[in-house]
Length: 247
Image 1 (cartoon, one colour):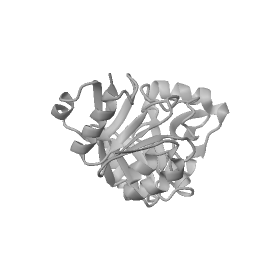
Image 2 (tube, helix red, strand yellow; image 1 turned 180 degrees about the vertical axis):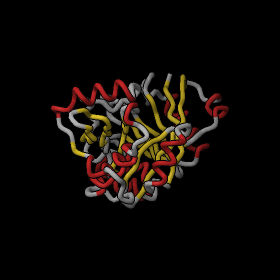
Image 3 (cartoon, one colour; image 1 turned 120 degrees about the vertical axis):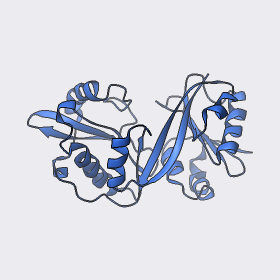
Image 4 (cartoon, helix red, strand yellow; image 1 turned 90 degrees about the vertical axis):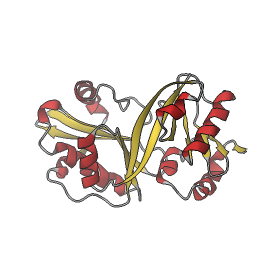
């Protein structure tokens, strides 16, 4: 197993070894330092402790990735209470791993082409700090569990749709690596069913596509409506994940 510190200089070599997989490209930052562990077909990474949200991940075949995760948790690499991304695992496989107190499944979807034009996407605008109170109010109402919030340093930009003076839809650009990443997409409950979700996703995708050759977003498998929408907009490639919380 190879361990590297300050791996920014090795980022391209690491990505090449992982066949430029979009999830790895998304996960490894382009400006922050990080640690990596490379095994036979597997890669684990650890972000700075001050990072909000998941602290790292392991990529590779599920069995080998789980083995590497177990070895690293035994060494105390991942802090208790922090989340780590793994390839999709069955619950019974996780039951055999100590130091895990919770898990959730989600799908990383990506595309390399901008979506087809959607009605109303011209209404999508880039927001500013002056919009933070309206963003907070909308997120509290329509997506209270979202970690994409004003003040989160991982958010690069905010986009939204207004109805008159009211902000009725929003989404965050949470790009960390070199894949444009859409997060926290939400529409006010009273304005759902009007195509605003499609307009927001398409408008944001087009804006991020001006700077990135690959776009991605995350979705829970149970959110069938969102999955159908994202696939209709071209997000048809998927990498199933299980995120675990370390004990």
